Image 1 (cartoon, rainbow, N blue to C red):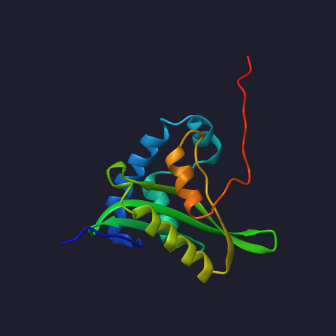
Image 2 (cartoon, one colour):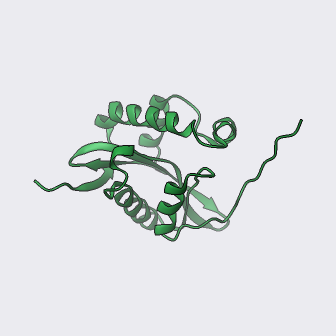
Length: 157
């Protein structure tokens, strides 16, 4: 059987896989420059379990599960919100297991996110990445998602 990648919306059966992947994503995120700032003021708050429940039950949010050969290997958390007079969809968090990052799972997730946004009337999609995370920056740029806001900081003593 050939290898294949796919994405789909999560359901309650994805709880354990999501929690495991979410924990992996936070462990990886903690290794990036500025992760302390992100964790303090930008990252989703709550346990993986409460985040799963919130995104699964809120009709303005969605969880996409990325799969490789029908095995969950990633997720994308989406949030529909007002941006001025229009609607936009924000990728709140995205993660694909390191061993399958070059096979197209992320692309399937982004395609599904864009489709979901369009079906819900969004005119823009937004995402974030850490400084130095070239892989994620390149991923977004493949979909023409480009920097619109850059946050800067300096240590002061």
